[in-house]
Every structure is written in C-alpha cells, then in structure tokens.
Length: 251
Image (cartoon, rainbow, N blue to C red; front, side, top):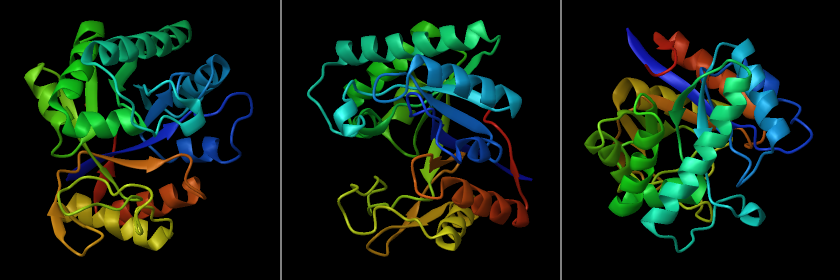
C-alpha cells in the first residue's frame, strides 16, 4: 500500500475564517497552522486547532518571517541565531494554544520565504532544525524533498517528511518556481490531481521547462489560500485514493 500525508497551510487569517477552510480541513490529514506572525492571530490559532481536533488531523506549527505586508513571502537578511529564535517563539506560541485544548503538536513546517531559504541554505536549515530539536525532538520536520532542510533535520536526529507540491510549478533543479514565473501556480483541479498521482506513484514531477524531476513524496501540500482550495483538495484526494493511495498523517 502506497501511503502519503495530505497537508495544507491553514489558520492564515485574523478574525474571520475563510468560507471554505473548514471544508478543506475535512479533506486533508495534516494542518500547518500559522503562528500569528506572517499571518493569523491567537483567535485563528485556537479555532484552527479546535477544528483540526474535530477532524483528527495531525497539527503542526507553520512559522514564518514577521512580514505581514508580504505574507512572509519576501526573503530577508537574517542570521542563523535570529532564525532559531524566530522558529522557537512561534512553535512555542502554537504549542501553548494547542495545550490549552489538550492537543499536541506533531510537526513543524516553515512558511514562505523562510521555507525557501532553508531549502537551499545549510546554515538557515540547521537553525530551523536545531530550534525544533530544542523544543521537542519528537516533532517531525517538513521540508522540500531533496532540500537542505531535509538534510538538516536528519543531521539533527529528527524524523523528516519530504514534501511535494501539486499546485506549484517546479524548476529543473527541484526547487519551486518563483511565484512571478509563468507556470508557478497551478489552479486547474484535474491538472493538480494528475500531478499529485504522478509525484506519489512515480516519484516524478514535470518541471515548467518539461524536465522530469525525481522527487520523494512523503507529504503533499495544498495551499489554503489558493482559489477553490477545498475543491482542489477533494480532487487530489479522490484521484490519489482511486490510484490506491492511502491518506494518513506522517508518523
């Protein structure tokens, strides 16, 4: 049996829950919850943890840069020590919210620019991994398949989850295509579903230039802020299950 985790970035709102987020969370198996810095709020964190518990999801912290104006997607000049503190503070904040509701964190997945920087920069990656280890070495570290972040997690003794993206374009080197690049965002549900099956079953993703890039697909991300995110998630889950794939959280 082929198994994959289906995760989504959620809780990236402040006071009013997006209309289809609850539906999205009924489809996925893991939730990456914004920690109130790049997006989100204490109220959103609490509501999202509660909804995750209702659906039996594995919950994780989704720490990002303190840059709400750019949704944490703009790279900034930051030291490894600053990254360690940034990740530690956000994981701690979400853990406290979860503990108040008798829910435990299961994983950590950096957000946006922090995620992309950790994917290629060993020092940044090591800082993220060390922050996770210092907080709780039992947590799973999510990172781009084949990236420095996955390598850093393994060096630190963490369990890791190699992540792929069905709704994002790839470059030939296995990195994500910048959002400004043509083909970086894929919103057509059948196309997203077909890519998901290809990545999970074949271990391949087709890059924007047509290159077939090998990937390890242990957890597959869909973005909660993508238009029609719940519809995309349903199409992906249905396609994976039709192909004989079991959906469950990373253990």
